[in-house]
Image (cartoon, rainbow, N blue to C red; front, side, top):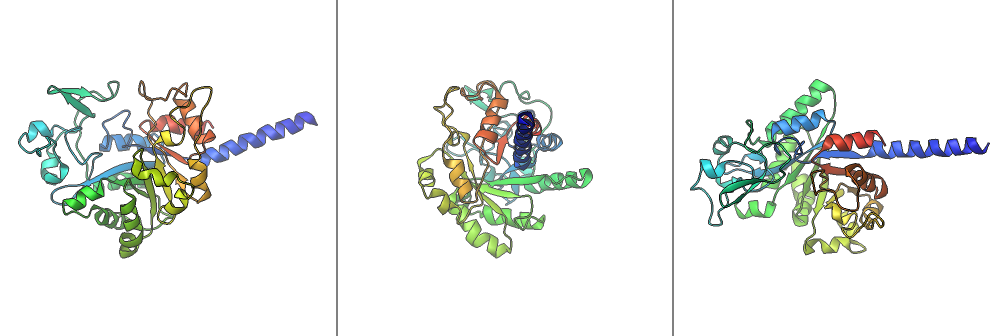
Length: 337
C-alpha cells in the first residue's frame, strides 16, 4: 500500500510538472539569433522550425514611414551603413533608421552585431554566425508577418508574434506616431483581440497606457499588452507592494530583465527568487523575462549550465515564458519537463 501511495504521488508530481511545462512558452528573441544574424527572415524561419511558440519583432520606422524589423533605432551595429552612406550620420556619429528611406535600407547588408574599435569591427558574440558572411537584409514588419502567417498555413501550426515598439518617444520627437502605425498593421493582418496569438510590448509605460486607453479603442481592437521592465530607476515604482496592481490597469503581463526574477547576488548554494513573479501572478499578469543566452559568460554563476538556468526560472520561479536567443534549447527543456 505504501509503495502504491508513493507511486501515485510521483505520478501526480510528474503530471503536474508536465501540465506546468505545457502552459509555458518560448519566445524566440530576435528569431533564432544565437545561430543566425538577428531579425533576419532566415533567423525567424529557423526559430519557427525549432518550435518557438512566439517570435519577436523589434519595430522601428523609416523616413518614409515604413515599419521595419530592427532592434536599434540606429543601423550601424548590424549593417554596412557606414560603408554605403558614410556622410549620413548625425552629429553623434550614429546612423538612424528614421533618416533613411526603405529603398536605401534595402540596399544595406545585415550581419551579426558588432562594435567598432579604431575602425575595426569586433563581433559581439564571437562564437555565432561569422561577421559579414552570406547575404542578409533588414525585413519590413509586413514581410515578417507574411512569413510567419504563411508558415502557419503551410505547416498547420499557430505560432504567435511578439512585436516591440522601439523608443516611441524618440519616434514622436521625430514626428512619427509609431504606435498607431504598428496597431494599424496588426489589425490589417488580423491581430485584433486577446484571443489572437500576439503580445505587444514596449519599455515605455506612458506609451503602453496610451496604447491601452486611446490607440487600441480608436482602432477597435483589444490585444495583450506587455510592460517591459529594465533596471533603471524609472521602473522602481513597479516593485512597490502595489506596483503590479497599478500595472494591471493597463498591462496584461510584464517582461522583466531576468536579474529581476532571480537576484544577481544569488549563488549556487543560495538562489534568491524575488517576489516579482508571485506579485504579478496575484494580479493576473503573465511574466515573460529576457534574455536567456548560452554563449560563453552569459549563464549566471548561480546556474551550473543553461538547462539549470531554465529550470530555475521556469519551474522554481514559475515564470510563464522566456525570451531566448536559443529557442531550440528552451523548447527541448520544456518537452523534457
